[in-house]
Length: 95
Image (cartoon, rainbow, N blue to C red; front, side, top):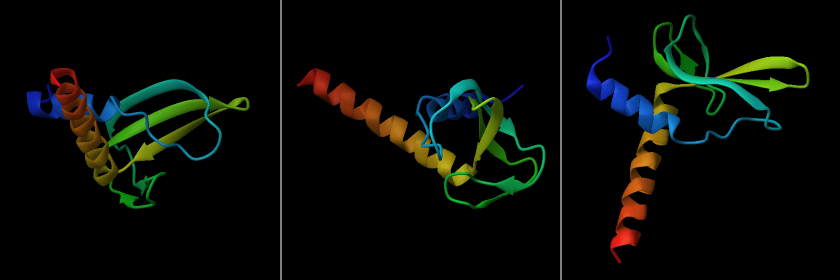
């Protein structure tokens, strides 16, 4: 079972719609996983190590499924963006 802090971070990351290269497809899966093998981030090109906590997004595009992996650094940026967006919308409501 994952610690509560990891679950909260994962939810923040998944709240942000990522910029995926190419034309958007139909989302089949969008979840946080431990990378099954080494690879590279589709956003920044950084190397992803095996077992690194990453975001995996699978989309159906032109009759085939494509999987996009986002490295831990890009996931941190997504989490920070979600926090900033929530803080900003909360301050607008109070004004």
